[in-house]
Amino acid sequence: MFKFCTFLTCIFFSSMVFAQNDADQGWHLKDRRTDGYFGISLEKAYNFLHEKGIKPVTIIIGVLDTGIDTAHEDLKTVLWDNKSEIPANGKDDDNNGFIDDVHGWNFLGGTTGNVTVNNSEWNRVYWRYRERFEGKQIDTSSLSRVQKYEYNIWLKARSGVIGRGPTQGRLDTLASYVDDVIFCDSFLRITLKKPEYTRETLENWKATTKRDQALKEFMLDVFDHFENEKLKNTVVTQEMKNFLEGETLKARSEKEPPVDNRRIVTGNDDTDPQSMKYGNNNVWAGDPFHGTHVAGIIGASRANGRGIDGVADAVYLMAVRCSTDGDEFDKDIAAGIRYAVDNGAKVINMSFGKSLSPDKIMVDDAVRYAISKDVLIVQGAGNSSRNINGFDNFPNPHFLFSDSVASNWITVGASDNNGRPASFSNFGSLAVDVFAPGVNIYSTTTGGNSYESLDGTSMASPVVAGLAALLRSYFPELTASETKSIIIQTASHPLLPSQRSGNAEETIEKLCVSGGIANAFNAVKLAYEFTRR
Image (cartoon, rainbow, N blue to C red):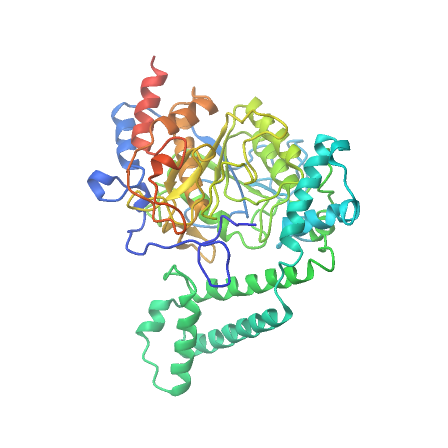
């Protein structure tokens, strides 16, 4: 499993990102020639639109993610507001099947609470089909194509579960280490009189006692596991806790099935394609840190003089919570797509992914539904530094049991401020459509109108989703497929080699369909010409 929200590297972690700390905040919006950063040339794009006197229509973009901090100063004025719903009256005023869905919907909730951690899909798939396949002689020639698919993904899941968990000794060592991190961090908060601090804070702090020096050296060592030097201690300690929890669950996975917390909380069967209306309206449940960062990249207010500027200036952000720590369920992805489509979204962003998809048919049907309603889907390519031409990266636009590919889908890789493909980014000359800035991207986060810089294709995807929203708001006659085509045709070509570890150096030109990086200025010019033919 890989999470697109990964924004650190640690010797314990399998998904890696690399921060680039010398880039200015907001570099992803800038222009190579005038600013020196290989961003998307957004200011030039807006200047062009204003010179032509083009006015936008505001459109809705569905942010399928971990939820959104709806009170954030840079987001609260651009949230989707369901005008047909009367807030907090406990009724489904618009008869869409969702009660009090004012700013969106949470498919990971129920009447008694919310899901905050999902199990690994590897574990879920292994135990889902274990009784059917384990120890059996399977004649694959007698299986239907659906059964063959299930058998093959079970074999893949089995290879990732059996013999892959940490030993008890390693788990004990890791638990002890995490305990030390929490202990030392708590002391440092008191000593520094700061609830939050960074690596730089520690480096500049002059420890005067042996105890303080020991605390400083230990926590600096902890920070060394994370490439992004701007991360705060709160993020570092939480990531350590999360990893320990994941490793603990992994150790159990060979011996016992995962607890189906999702079904317990939501009361919904994740294998039933007929029941798509479940959950609650708490779109900020759990930790919406990731979704809040993604939302800000897309459409943080450009007119309030605070924080950051989003890519799109005429967009309402619809929060659709279908992701949390762990692997997403296909059912929640499918339900989220359908909800966004039914409630008026013209663009959907999905900054998540996994390596197995047991209910891909459900997702495929939802994507086909989005096609029928002319909705564009944008997704991050993933942070595993691998070629995904084989379509073992989910969700994806490749329809199961078919040679066809969804025409309304853009897959996005991540680039740095010099125009190089990010070392962590997945790639593929057939599977990745375009690259976009995804290293050290500054945006909104939770914690009281906060802002932080994160890395990942999670950040590159909303850059492109924001560009797609910009195009569809200023040129509303564009279809989803036309918008995709324009973004791909107008990508800029840096021709700088990759610094990807473990692979031959390649330019972006050979790593994606477009051969380049999304460029807003080029895109609006072509859209202008295209719509006036």
